[in-house]
Length: 148
Image 1 (tube, one colour):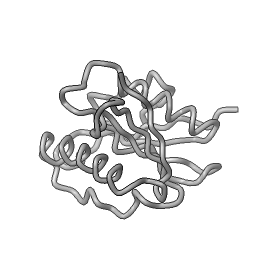
Image 2 (spheres, helix red, strand yellow):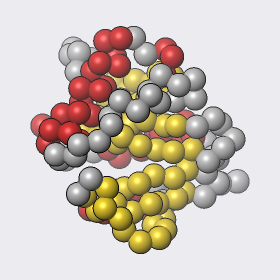
Image 3 (cartoon, rainbow, N blue to C red):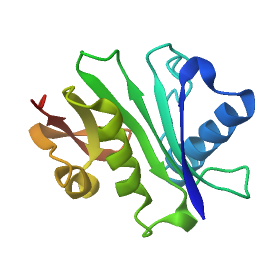
Image 4 (cartoon, helix red, strand yellow):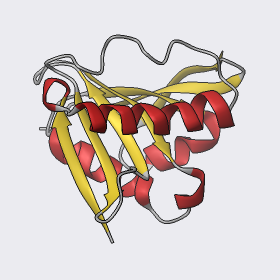
């Protein structure tokens, strides 16, 4: 069984931060072979919120995402990933639903890998602009307008 976890950047324990960074590096840097500055200095910001799914009996998350920006501003959804062995179980959808609950009426934007834009479209995100290359993977900017 898995449980949703949420923590603001400053509230992450060192072990939680390490586990989230490890998952992101495993997926983005190792699996997808993207060499980019994963340690961007934003994970511990006051306005950063981390959401992740983690088995109750394990110390490793199966999926995670990160929300940037203060409430009432345009928020950024990023670093959305799922461990290779946990894909196809709906964890990405569960995380996005939890993210939208947290974001409330705020407008939000994300840079989706083109093959994943259908996931985000189900949550009201609309593609804008043209696809672009980000570390060898085609991405597209998607935006969800402020509701209400």
